[in-house]
Length: 355
Image (cartoon, rainbow, N blue to C red; front, top):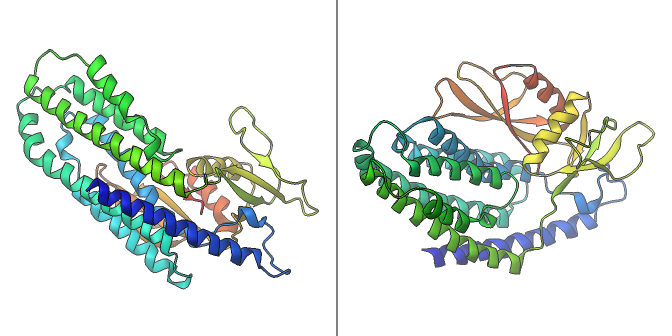
């Protein structure tokens, strides 16, 4: 199975590289009257704001799992199978949305690979937790055993890492050493504890091996992706080097006051977007796009989104009365939506998908 995944990951990387080359060639031949002012090397195709949702769902789902482990002594209740369904629901919705764009074969293949891998992982984990895991869970006291405490801490460390860096760079080996070095071997609830230790050790060993294979494959195929996103803003912000020190202007302000700058990509883009919006700054372009950008928020179940183009909704499976809404908003109105959400105590901006 790991060899199968490795070959597909390498193929996905190769196709992504080929598609990127085609896109770059197309941009290089853009007409002189191109209204987009973002430099060519900072542009990304408009379909990517939608296609990044399935990738980020595989951050959102582990984040929900980590939070769940911190709040319950009974981890077998986590809805692994329902999360598989949500991944494929989201992928189907964004695929339908981007039918108007040229088919991005490399990106689709990459999403399929990570989707199938996660489906296999969650299926095996769900079956295990609903059988042997639930059996040993019934044999323990109501308190979390030390291995369960470790599992919650490891899950959160993993989520914090993958919000910024690729998952395969996470140090699974050090987590395995910590499990066997720092978590005591003796104590009550030994049946449950040794079952958890077996499960955690197996997971960490498999992921460490798989991560090494993926790392070798990606390093041989990819150049490192740009860690920043270029944006055109309505005006320059008041700088805050202590908290938002990665903002960088690429050129002096233009005659209309607008400015070309870079801000961090991935998780950082969401926080920097809220920072800019809070200063009354609007976006004109993001990564060379002036159309729509995808956003997800957590809102109460009875909330109906207003003034945005809703793509789909998903219940937050471990929290009653909360749902995820995923919608497209014009880039020129992104800051307006972020300011509205910041002023609403029951709305949480989950992510802004920055191409």
